Amino acid sequence: MNLQQLRYVLEVARHNLNVSDAADALFTSQPGVSKQIRQFESELGVEVFIRHGKRLVGVTEPGRQVLQIAERMLRDVDNLKQVGDEFSNEAEGSLSIATTHTQARYVLPRVIRDFLQRYPKVGLSLHQGNPRQVCEMVLAGEADLAIATEAIEDYDDLVMLPCYQWNRCVVATPRHPILQAQPLTLEQIARYPLITYDDAFTGRSLINKAFLGRGLKPDVVLTAIDSDVIKTYVAMDLGIGILARMAFDPAEDKKLGMVDAAHLFESSTTRIGLRRNAYLRGYIFSFIELFAPHLTRRNVETVLAGGGDDYQL
Image 1 (cartoon, helix red, strand yellow):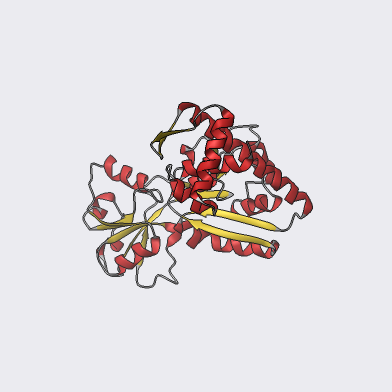
Image 2: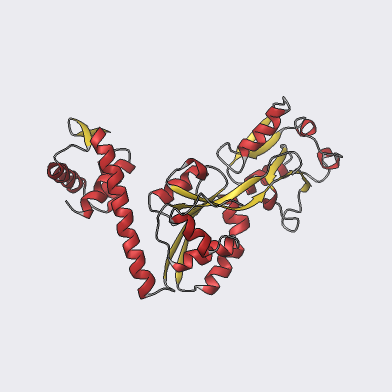
């Protein structure tokens, strides 16, 4: 058996047993992937996949264990490469970040600017998705780290590093009566059509929890994954919006008014997610510390090595 066969087996599993899609992702042919998997199974003496005719329809019980081991082995191979890169050229390389729109649009620009000034020879790429998608990208080795508010704590194979806490605001057209409410209450918000985040995003669960705790059922007329989309429809006066406070900029959002709503909702925590026992290049530690200054290299290395529980704010 060889590393190529391990990659083929994992890629087929990641593409829901679709060998053709896996072959496309691997830039090879479907017959070649099928042949390599058959050879791999023959050498192991067990079948990894359940077949119905020529189609793969499931994963066998020993196959599940094989996939877990294969993923660990390929992760260790990647760590070996990272070690070599670190000592041969510590200021060059690549950094892939998986994150949500709110982080990419409102929090990361300053951090990325400072990072690229410090490491001009590091190629940086941003991948956007919902919190679960960005976690899956890290686990699949498609990204070095995830930055999100939800979901990271749901993955045992990710180290969770709390970065900062934030809360929410209410936005509306400038003359909307909600902006004059003193004090602002959930009951007042519930009187109006509401535009806010999709259930998978940016603390939506805490918004739902707050209204539920008061026995209220707000009239949510529109949800979106993007803070800018929410603001666009609020500016059209289709409803009032509940936003992450960081997503409102008075200089840019002149068509809207804002009132702070931190007293109405529990705070949310943005976290960085890393694969457990991953080997990180030196510049990745620098990026993490730029994003969250309390996450020094020593703190992160201790958690990655299993020397303590996930870091707490």
